[in-house]
Image 1 (spheres, rainbow, N blue to C red):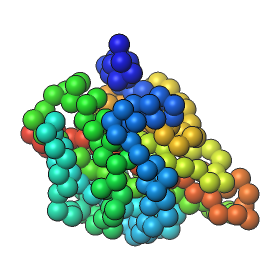
Image 2: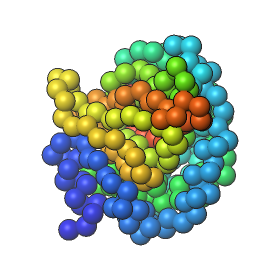
Image 3: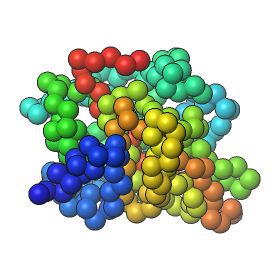
Image 4: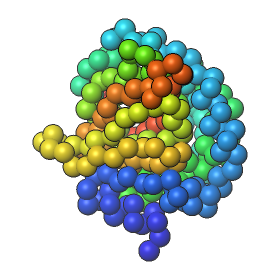
Length: 239
């Protein structure tokens, strides 16, 4: 049984799986991972998220959409990210345009991530093609001002499958991920700490959220960088 088989079993059984960095690195390397350091440095060049309904200035991001199938990965024209208020009561209901992914989208690291996600998710729920959105997030924390990785609170994303991949933490405390069933009962909690720690989520079956992050040393810069990748079957529309 392969590592991907184990993850697929956990997703079938519980709706989520926490993957620690060594296992993720092994799987991604088998899919062609290289140049991780350069990929991670691209988080130093993200634009400010100006759509925060809570008035926060703590989130930076880039975004891109792709059509992914077994045959190919094709980047779609730049487009807005949209979620209905059913899925995002804080920032939903509008088309949000973010700065697009730059060279990171063409990197071997990113391509390996998409191939791995497709192999896993398509094996669970086969589809001719997938609409995939990728979000680079940096959440900053300052003295007296925490950063909110999930300002919308405990939520679903309105897709089929979600990957949350840790890129790096600098001078950050907390940021605990919790996963809840549809009845809001706690199913599990963990902290993405090391680069390549990851959460894999069945968005139909669970809610997920992350606690605010605080600087360990208030006098120094502090941030939490993650990549979020969502997969939605092209034949299905969930606003």
